[in-house]
Length: 101
Image (cartoon, rainbow, N blue to C red):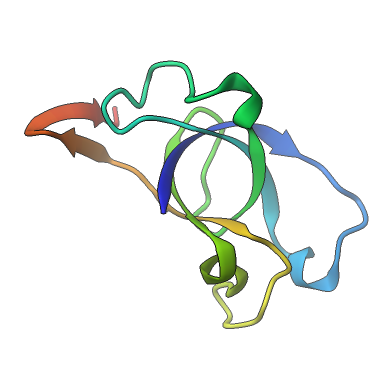
């Protein structure tokens, strides 16, 4: 799993059947030591399905690979990235580096 910031939405009018009920969001990985700083690499943005109801600007927890393929209904979705949680806070080396407002 990794932390990421939601940077935008991706709209696709024609999608594979397993993606039809999912919102697609554009994510940028962030460092746990500084989640509000710019992303790890600006060119490292990727698309994930949203299983948590996240919005633009939020810090989220993302699962990658085969773990991302099972959606809320237990069906397979053709994806390798899924948002599974909206982050409330991050503690790194004993210091709170992010607190949701």
